Structure formats: C-alpha cells, structure tokens
Length: 90
Image 1 (tube, rainbow, N blue to C red):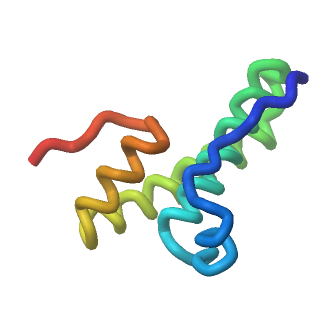
Image 2 (cartoon, helix red, strand yellow; image 1 turned 30 degrees about the vertical axis):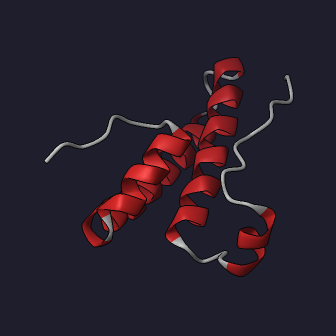
Image 3 (cartoon, one colour; image 1 turned 60 degrees about the horizontal axis):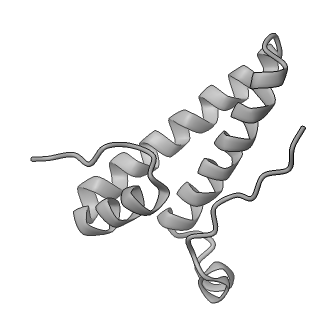
C-alpha cells in the first residue's frame, strides 16, 4: 500500500488548542475516510472496515449538518478546503 499524505488544513497551533472543534473533528474523520477508502480498494471483502467506514461517514455527516445549521460561513469554508462535496445553495 502506498503511503499518501493526508490533509492538514488546520495549522499546528490550532490543532493543539481546538481538538474538540467541529472543524478539527471533520478533518480527522476525512483523513480516516480517505485511508479506509484506499484500504478497501485493495481489500474489497473486508466487511469490518466497510462497516467502520459507514459509521465514520455518518459521524462526519452529522457534524457537517450541525455546522451548516450553526455557522454557514465556517461550513462553506471547510467544505471548500477539504473539497468533499458541492456547496449547498439556499
């Protein structure tokens, strides 16, 4: 398996201070999702990893829904930095 560099959107100082912030958690979940996705490309029948991936996807989806309700500007910035979905237009 090839070692890929993962996203580091949040600076090192912010990581130490705001580990509980929604943005930090979404970045960590996104890194886990990308790592599990690359793992599942090699091991297609690893059903335990598939289940874990679905659980992490659900957690990230709930966090992003919370962030979009509370602060739409931070949500749009995070989505554009991570490049994970299209922006919602209201």
